[in-house]
Every structure is written in structure tokens, then in C-alpha cells.
Length: 167
Image (tube, rainbow, N blue to C red; front, side, top):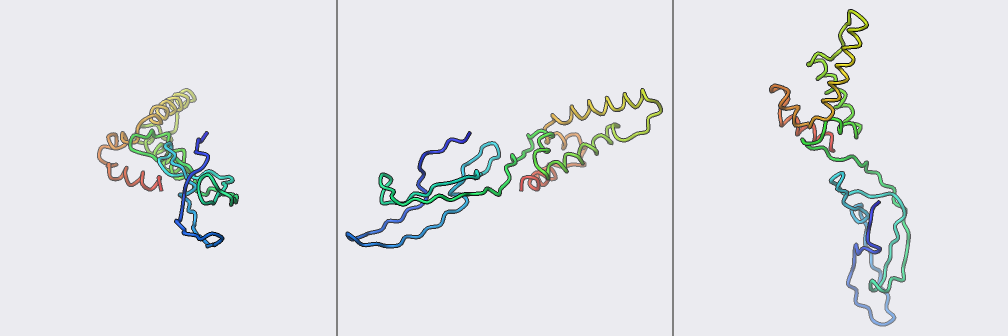
């Protein structure tokens, strides 16, 4: 659960008023005014729901009040880094596509891809080996893809891929 202060100062204007005088003050609230920093995704996030806007001469005197209902439109996907595990790619739609492609490619390169089995036992053994290989690779940091690729997948390529997924 998110813990936030009961009141947060977002905007203010210093206005000089004579007794009985009125002045209009205008300000705009942005996405960031409703946001909190979410360390899980390393980004600012807004939770959907009602927010109460209070206006007054001081924090002790807030006679004007309005409620706005905010609908968050930004998806919450944790940002991936080279230290993220391969299975963490599956947390976002773009990452799921990359995960599937990487797994298929690695299975083929390591002999776990689609092969014709000559017997039911051979087929069962191939599936078992394929499953074990996938379990091993899912828990591997993404940075290891560079090391395992024998130069076919560079650190720059990994950074570019992560940038694309994290956008």
C-alpha cells in the first residue's frame, strides 16, 4: 500500500489583499503533481482515484475544496537493466515478444529447438532437456546474453533493446 502525507503543497501564489478585496488566482496541476515515485518501476506513477484539491490562505485555513477523479493511463512495468533476469522480460507486452524470440533462438542454438524424434522416448527426453534448459535460462541475467553470444549480441545491442522495452 502507498503511504502519502495527508496534505501536499503543490502550488502557491503570494497575493496581497486589502480587507474585503478579492482576486482570482490560477494554476494548473500536471501529471507530476499527482504522482509518487515508485521504486519498483524506477519512475513516477499516478494511482487512479479521487484527489481532493484544497485552496486557502494558509495550511490551517483551507475553505475551498474540490475533488477530481484521476484515471492513470501510464502502465506500470518495472524498468529492465542488464542485471534483470531473462524471465522479467515477460512483465511487459514488448518484453514478452522479445522473451519468446530469445528463448526460441537460444533453444535452436543449444540443440533444444524443433527436431524430429525417432522414438517416443527420444521425444520425451528432448522435451525434458528443453524444459530444463528453459528453466536454467529464465533465471539468467540479461547481461549474460552478451557473454553467451560469442560476439553476435553486443552490450550496445542489449542497451538498445532495453531502451526500446523500457519506453
